[in-house]
Length: 98
Image 1 (cartoon, rainbow, N blue to C red):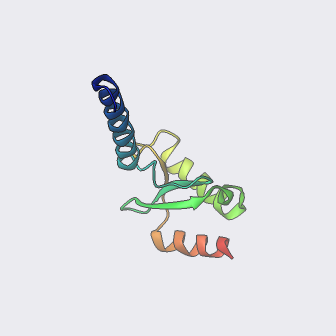
Image 2 (tube, rainbow, N blue to C red):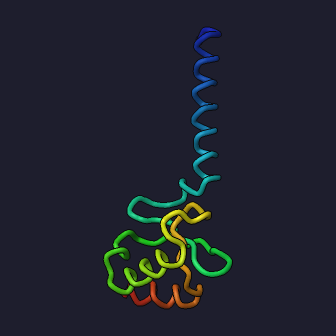
Image 3 (cartoon, rainbow, N blue to C red):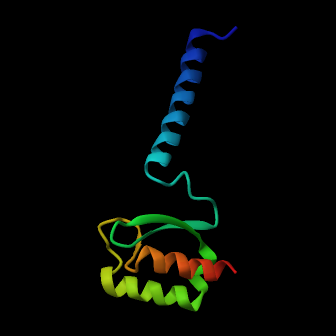
């Protein structure tokens, strides 16, 4: 049987793990798989999760240059924001997937 002090320590650890998972999920970090990143696209800043490998593709590099010209590196969204339309982004990433 666990002593009271051990039960409190165990409960505290469970609570800390649970809270840290909730914070990661609320901040959007928890749902981005390894090897991917989240970007925000279009007027409504729709969030897309893309493979990091896209960053090396010349067409995607053009989008990054456009984003840098439009927003710089200190954008208020706090993430990588790409100023093209959602339709254009979906078409481009569909081509990159093939």
